[in-house]
Structures are given as structure tokens and as C-alpha cells.
Image (cartoon, rainbow, N blue to C red; front, side):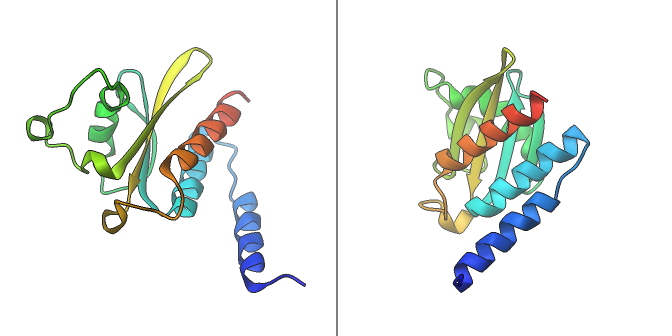
Length: 141
């Protein structure tokens, strides 16, 4: 017999299986929504190599600004001075990764909840690995 936690997890998984879309943009957003909710994150933003927002979930509407900075945030050789660019949220609240699909470089960023900047329910890198995997799967179809 399944415990209460197991039933909740199974219910959540089955709900996600039913939240699907034939429209690629909607499917990408649903995938980001699921990753964000499961990770307890404030937002997830995916940008292309030029800093244009490809998809996002959650946040306060500043996803385009964050997307524009993702290529710089992902490159440790480039130094961002927080005072110069007014970066919100602060870099400590962000996890950033880079991945490629069909030769195109994409950047994904997980924004931690403001009250949980030192820890979330899931590791930001782990959530971003799920984002990259989901995008790769959806965009290769």
C-alpha cells in the first residue's frame, strides 16, 4: 500500500502527463512550469546565444532583461559589476547552464525564491539539467 507521500508524488506525475500540448511553445512552457514548481524556484528563463528569451516560467516580468544577460552570466571570463548593470535578482540567487541543440547554443537560468537564496527544494543545476533534457527532447521532434 502506498504512503501519503508516494500518492502525492504519483498524482503530481500523472497530472504532468496530462498537461501536454501539441504546440511547441506551449509544450516548452509546460515543461518549464513543471521544472520550476518541482524545484521550488521563482523563475526559469531560457535564452538564445544573442540574449533573446526563448521561453520562461514564473518571475516578475523581468525575463527579457535576465535573458539578455544570460550569455554574459554563463561566461566566467566576462565580469559583471552588479552596480553597473543593476542585476536583479542578485547573482547568488541564480544558477546558470549552457546547452546546445542542433548546433544552437542556449542558456538556462534558475532563479531561486527570494527567501530561499541559500537553498531550494532541488539543486538549481539538477533542475537545469532537466530543462536541457526536456528542451532537447521537445526540439528534436
